[in-house]
Image 1 (cartoon, chains in turn red, brown):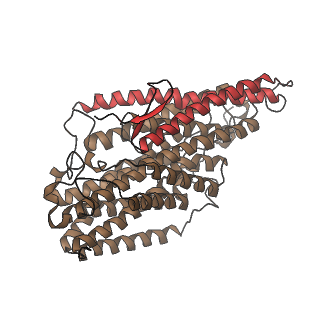
Image 2 (cartoon, rainbow over the protein chains, first blue to last red):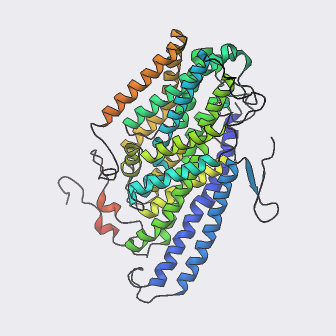
Length: 101
Length: 429
């Protein structure tokens, strides 16, 4: 029975990817929300009266990063659907044929 | 030349009909995977959510060009390594293979409807694979089933069904719980109302990704099964397998229509029954589901969207201190997961025996009528306590209500202690 170590090996990778992206992106989003709240000031942040406009800048930068990550996710889904994979071989992501096993 | 309408051709037609019917049940059974959290937090209206999910499923399904002929290959020995039906099953216009697939699909549909009636989010992939395994057992005995493959890679019933169903919900749970915990730490000082509103946007985005991934994954399975049947029936050449355009579009339409119908009973269990979800938790759950599903398919790790989505929702309940998971509901659900594969297999085998036992075209017709009758009965039963888009998010009552007073606050809330519920019964002073 070699399958359990094989499955655990796969599971390990999924867990790492899941924590990096599945928890990482929500964390960035949470910082973005906090940035937006700082920019708003009173009513958005507990015990804060003054608005700090730079919060908005931080928020938008973070949202941009998230959007880029999500578009990678979408291109990945599309690629799987049409039998291709996304590579980063040429720095910019691009669709290539799935390598034959 | 139009071929004469042989028995095999008629069975083939029935197989296509039940395959599309399965795809349809697959759609409404899984709407909740992507949309339960968004509906529960009010990020989307129930109707808006199912419409969005239906469109994304349609897009996802149409995008799937790659033939998924080998879906059933992982668990049963009815195809060769390229996914073509085995020669010995091709006698009589492929009747035996057609009946295996037919019995399997009918078994899968019956189980999907039954679990829907009970409002349990069980895995549609398990219902399909279980049904096919049952049909194969009915036709070829236990030797026809691939239990563990040859051990060199993750394969067979153990590798593709049992192990992933044990592992994937746990991974999703860990990811979602971690995300929830961190989100509430980071936004501890953000006012509840502001946070709730801003997180809805992210939640809808993450839910959309789950829907799209679902469309590509699940519709492809039905397309694969129909194509397999067409190859067996001789309508698609075995030397040059392709998914006919009509198969693609009808499968995509079936899953999208099913999704639009919305499995409200299941959405209710997932969105309201397990955990009371706030929008940051919704984002955490959907982001976790989307990444675990995508990472797994990239690594070729088979899994059920349903198991991942419910694992994520339980995770956000664990990750938020004060929120609670209704373990009685969770327990019922896990029990349904465990029996889905064997139960669908038993149905698949019984359906195969009835169809093959009576024989001819009459056998499959009897099974088909049985399916129609059972479906109608279960639909009728569901009207007794109907769940639809109007009452899907009503308060959950089953005696195991979580402590609402605590659930409204989070870990870091300095006033948390003051709001803790008083112990029930005579107070001890």
